[in-house]
Length: 146
Ligand code: ATP
Image (cartoon, rainbow, N blue to C red; front, side):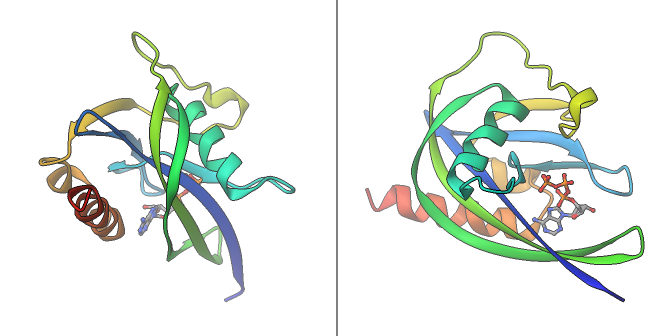
């Protein structure tokens, strides 16, 4: 099977001991809870893509504190094996909209069913992906160090 490489980036947005989580669906149409992210456009930096995707998917405008790490996973889509690398950034909100954010899926933006702020203490239970659980445990360790 042909393998295609894809690159995305996204944000772990922390505010008052809570983290920004999206409820969306995977390729099998199952509900997943994860962090906002998306495809890095040609000529766009991974930082700019992460900030843009977080705002498009959640409505929250952020600034980057630092890079956390790159993770990789793979899946099969339309007969192609996709190897995806995601760069995650630690972020802080600079503007949080009041009310509910509706992402506009008609212009190609991923459908986000809900945007949630979840307590850092409780988020591991709700996250769908192992790598997300690892990222949040890394973030908690780093925040505890000061
Ligand atoms: P992007 O947000 O990068 O534009 P997308 O929403 O089109 O991407 P992905 O989120 O990469 O697509 O989802 C494609 C497949 O990969 C889904 O079946 C999903 O369950 C799976 N997937 C997504 N994130 C992870 C992860 N962190 N670990 C393992 N599998 C994942």
